Length: 168
Image (cartoon, rainbow, N blue to C red; front, side, top):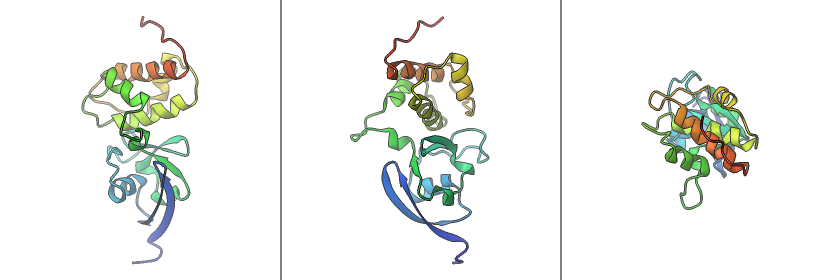
């Protein structure tokens, strides 16, 4: 085992402190899936184009397939599993995806939900066009996006204590 090829990293994953000896060439996707069995992190395109592998790192979404695991040193990483409550209950945005039928095959859903969580954490009310642009880094082959947009919009209004306007 070459010393240059492996490195010990320390980070927080879904609120738990973790340490791992990782190959310096490994992606964060590979570390999360292979070392920690966090299978909500999907392997899609593996070139940062589809959004299926999105995770939140220190409050900002990243494509974990093009984020090296060694860059996770000292970072706080959240995957879809980290949004659930202590007894496995769904977060508000996860429940909105269910309620609005924004999930079909589910492959793209974790990445969409994490991007939505980052957007929602800003505490702003966005227009539909702004939300579409903010969610544009994701590919979905099943739902047609409108249900996803509606789920994010519904949660955005609820978190801001406002009534959602009637659909036009």
